[in-house]
Image (tube, rainbow, N blue to C red; front, side, top):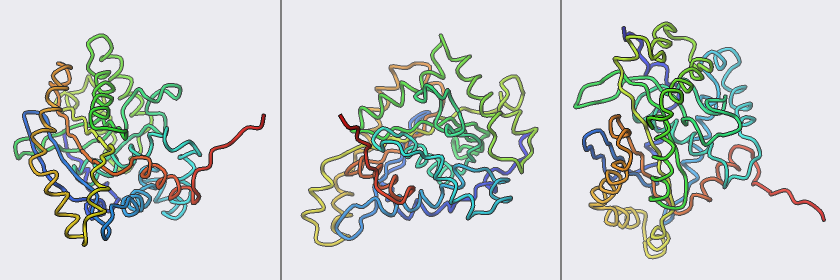
Length: 314
């Protein structure tokens, strides 16, 4: 029933993102997982350059499927991928968070993305609805790997509380008893339509996306959730640290024992959505100095120029 090795279809450098991040904790409580990261210091500063370069290197594999890249070549894919990221105001564009979530899930969870929002994973007119990527693979549960389909959610915003609230509100659309059947079915139907992976056992893949199949019923649902948000204390540590090691240790000390506080906040919020607690939630938590700096840097990395807002005369 489950014969496909999904990890072999992951073509990005799975170690690249780990070279840009420090992991501070990995905690599991029931069906909740918490992974807390920060950017590695660059000298006595925290810069997004390395992370943005890593995401840019993965851009072709985010936009195009294996067959397209094999047919046209990596250079073609890399040059053309940026056209899917329009010249939109970076502060209002959610695609950069979706790209980061894609890299985190494929790299750290080893699950392959098979469809994404760029190619209409959800309604063109209402992009807040729908998942930020559908993935297939195996998910670790109590030290065993279990077949899973994953529907992601990414929030890059001003605070942890805001990011958490917005993410769970979005995910609840898959589980709210009044809309969940149509919402989940529609998402999986669209995923079937926009399959990115073609050099696989398509029968197995479609079965894993078809709610009436036995294969679908044997899977667990996982929501990988990226919460990236602003924190003010990075700047203070950058000013007083004399070396990269001193800055890194200051961050470690600041985040020591924070996993319990963050997990409690997550549990408290998840409890407001009883249906969500029935599936697996895997949180990638990434505090940073400025989410706007991340967005602006990603825009410039992709387009080669900084964003300039158009002005109208009159």
